[in-house]
Figure 1 (cartoon, one colour):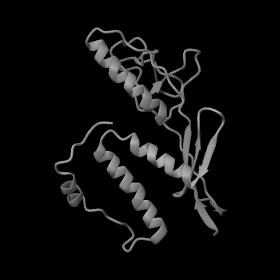
Figure 2 (cartoon, rainbow, N blue to C red):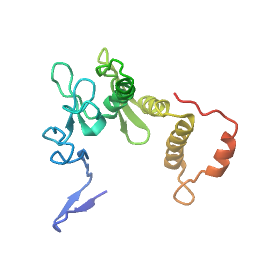
Figure 3 (cartoon, rainbow, N blue to C red):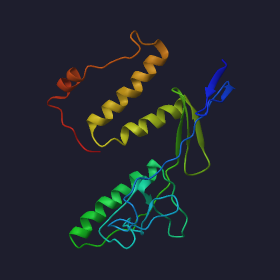
Figure 4 (cartoon, one colour):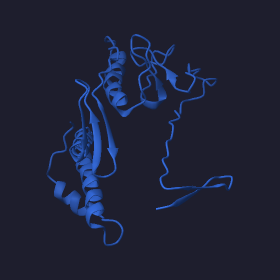
Length: 198
């Protein structure tokens, strides 16, 4: 299927497939403002091993806003996996700094890589043995991992239903373009159930 891509300047490109990659740009307070935060070249705040902003012992940063490194100086990737793990340390370290307890240095543990390849396929590279799983089984494993990592049962159900809805729409189509699920009915079904943190 031939498609045409129209650029901002009006030029047109014919293509069968268009891949778009987008960078991430951190949003942090200006380095010349009140805080004077030390910034890396790409604009992230530079953090120490405890995820504190350098020269600011009571300001913590993580995720896309943080430039964090391994003990050997290797930069950690700006991925959800790193951010999720850093969040546990930052949570502890904020509590520890308030209560005058020892802070924990962030130790990243690579758990492998996952990616979606359309709705029904995926790839999962495990962190040991160079083993890679691909196809529908990898897609299912990736989706299960995302559902598992949700902070509450309510979130996990919503994410799981979202995955299921997209799968059903892809296979059977949707009568009105989108399958809507009844939030009120869903809320009633959850009444009396306990929402626990994972």
